[in-house]
Length: 200
Image 1 (cartoon, rainbow, N blue to C red):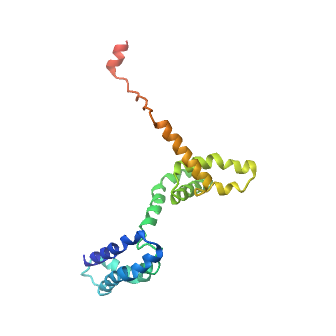
Image 2: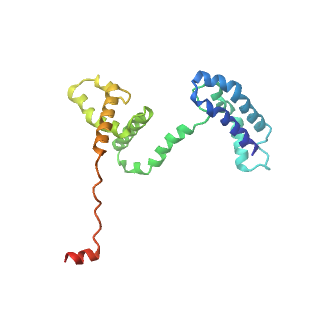
């Protein structure tokens, strides 16, 4: 419980620093976060990973912290490094969730195609582009490269290009205009027995 409280103090000190620049974040970490991290590590070092009065998970946690102390404290020396890997775990999670679906790739070429499209999706998200519009954009524009032989078009295919940003804005505006004043069509109802009797 004490270890958890000390870890919480580390994150409570570091979380408000997310809005700062990397340089400012590192400077603040030196004065505010490092002492909290040191208090946690001092407590962990006071424990014996071979002490069987601790639970198995607690012993594993103590042993892990001691053996990976350099990696766990690396974020204190670089403002660009987050204190945990939650962001990257979220990215890897999509790979794990899709694993069963990817069994139907059937062939190595199919697996490569899935990897390519997954890369497109990740690149779009990393650059705050709308994934649907970006994939639609690639399907429409990528064939022009082979038709025209213009390698310069490759720059325009990137999700950060001005050409794509303009395309996304136009598509979003077009979809919004179609939605204004429109009404959803009535849903078809499953015929009921009494309706059949009436029509007869």
